[in-house]
Length: 186
Image 1: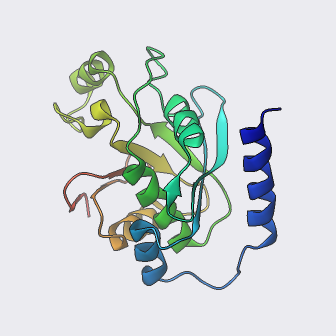
Image 2: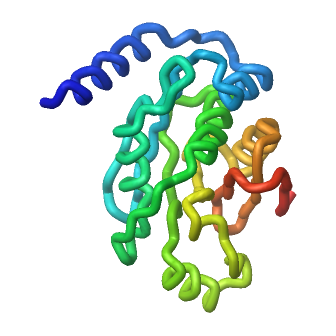
């Protein structure tokens, strides 16, 4: 076990022991996005690869490089196995929305980074795939939760007022990105 693994595991233990049960508010989400000296943790799993991630990626105003690398690998294009650095602002938005919903379950990630080849293939099958998708530059994620509806996830992500949020009710997921503030599918 490396020193960074030990440190991160220790921090996860501290985080688990210090979780506050008070209901989160919109101001909590904005604090997370502004980076007001907190601990940020993301939990996701991929039904496509069977992999999961549960990591603290931000402590006291600084991103943890090793954790961001793990997140980028986890969010790789599973069809081509290509990895792209995921913009941490996208992870921040997902984390803030997760806090607003007051849930413990991890997100199911449907799509993180998409190679241009994968995006083109998906675009040929669906009108809902953008030609210049932010997935191709590591700035978007398509997520769902079993315990929350698409509408609930959409409202939480929209409340962050920090990027693009798309509601895909028929496909049962919410798109979150760190691009310009906008919403669709409401």
